[in-house]
Length: 150
Image 1 (tube, rainbow, N blue to C red):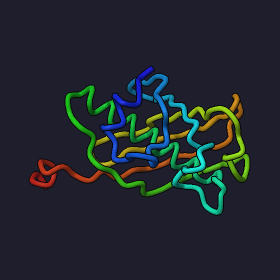
Image 2: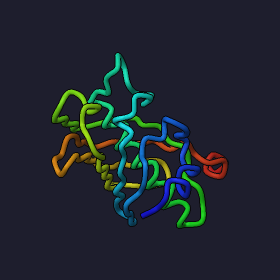
Image 3: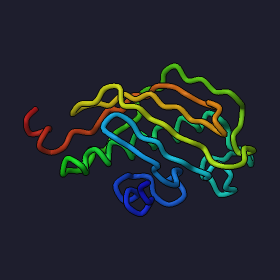
């Protein structure tokens, strides 16, 4: 398990917008994180007092971000900033998630990764049931070195 204090500074999501609580495990291909932030009244994604299931996509995207940051750190660098450019095949099992007790298990698996983009599959479970899944693509902002080569 990796404490949040070890990886939170590696990602752009800070304060309340950092939705994941801890990383359970990760390797080159995937990451498993947990969160109970869906129950917080101050969750910044809440609207009209409700946290809708569509926000599970953000939980998946943050797991991708943490995974990319951990991979970059392991290689001796830092992850390039990225922009979520597409979601595909999103399936949601319920309309809202703030009424779920306990924690969410957030899984992300890297399908493709290169200097310019990442593609991941994500899956969010609650009490062993899949409540959301999909695929996401991120375009990375080129580093100054990459821009100089272009």
